[in-house]
Image (cartoon, rainbow over all chains, first blue to last red):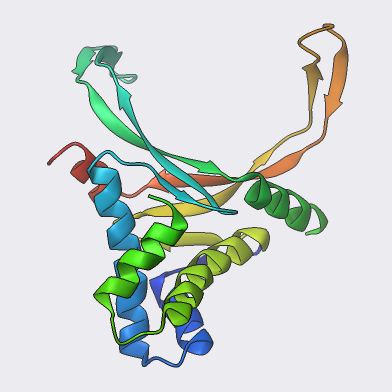
Amino acid sequence: MSGKTVTRADLSEAVYQEVGLSRNESAELVERVLDIISDKLVEGESVKISSFGSFVVRKKGGRTGRNPKTGEEVPIGPRRVLVFRPSQVLKSIVASATRSS
Amino acid sequence: MIKSELIQRLAEEYPSLYQRAVERIVSTVFDEITSALARGDRVELRGFGAFSVKYRPARLGRNPRTGDAVDVNAKAVPFFKTGKELRERLNDK
């Protein structure tokens, strides 16, 4: 594992290199991609990016949890969680690429 | 929403850009995340979430039909953890 962290800045730089836009516009477009996806998910809609994966919103019922430290019971209300399901393509790229490293 | 709808939506917001440019922008974003994960790197997008690679050790699995023991090799799998802001927005905070 190389342990490097890729951020928005790296994604914007890649977009900047790839398309003839300014650095500012590239950063703004990366942001819009993330925002559009987030807004759809908040509306409860799934977002499917072919050959990458899908983001799915799941509803979870309420349950009684426990504070693991004190053993105290804490109610956990119903909530929505986001699940990312990687595509088969992404899974195999990650599985085969990291095998050698 | 699917990828083509995302591209469509972005193209409407930026009428000055060619559709092809918008397609390349969207593909570049996901291709970059994919290559980072292929290198074993982490991708952290504050507010949205973080992609990382989790390593699953080799284990002894079972063929559910026959009950036979099968060796399952160690493997690396992509993982996503939702960011704080998005997690809160999903629960209208």
